[in-house]
Image (tube, rainbow, N blue to C red; front, side, top):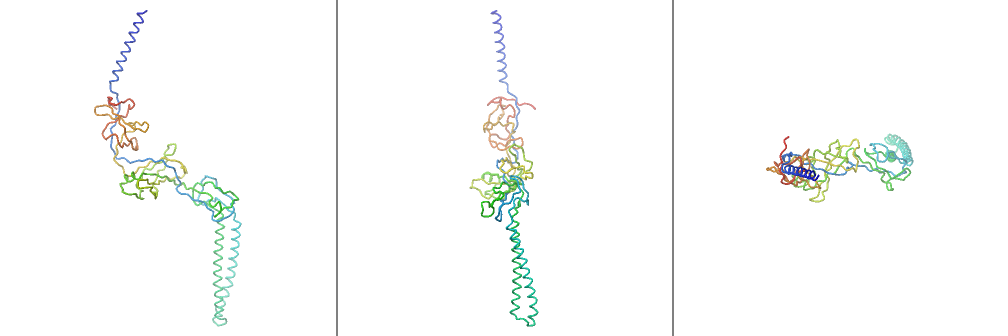
Length: 370
């Protein structure tokens, strides 16, 4: 029995030693990996921005006359069209003023007609000295005064009609209308607590602010000072919404904001995106990518060659003697399937694209054949 146990232990020990030899042998064999050559290409300098979406412009709705609000004709937060009726004000006072102005105009026209007849009769009488020159001058003055009275009454009627038209408030632009604090029965108008009723934000086109540090801006443009002419600085402007999907419309440059905080502050370029279906909402944050300036020579490596852990980016450089070397790199932006590398590797070096987790400093590797 003891002999059988001893034989079993000897066999197990032999198997264990054989396994150790195999592991030792395998550990000395170089692992097979794929590599890529670090290249230098002319690629666009692409930058990413995260910023809120803003309305292209907005209109504040203010009543031009005072009166009691009769009704509103919109739903809060919903689209309205230019020319759409949105508020009505009680028009009884304005209607009464219009009727009075119409009556005053009729009276002025009647008096003007009488004054004209008197003047026309006086002219031939004055020629035969049937009336004095003084009387003719009086009829002339009365006729001119009557004409002026008609013009004044016509202007009063126009003003009355204009005031009456102000009792119906229409949307001046297309857009999204906000809520109103005023409700039916409130006294609204200039000088009241409801001097502003609501706002309409036009989002047919939305705007996004892209802030660029002045130093970076000067380096990209090659200028020595800030300029408002930046319409050719941006290209390939893309927008991604919160879920990561890309917006189908490409952006375009709108204008450069006027103020710069300081010499080494930031400048703000405003870009726009067409928004015909109101898919983009004001206040929503978006990720904007844009190419700045002309294409430049950049060092690039495949994205699969880069390992990123806790804001540290690194690659494995394969030296000429087929050993691996760990390198930290500073990355720029991506372009297609490539990372732009600002420092850490140079053109012509080889970087590993597979087996990154198996490599260690000084480890021998062999290049896999494709």
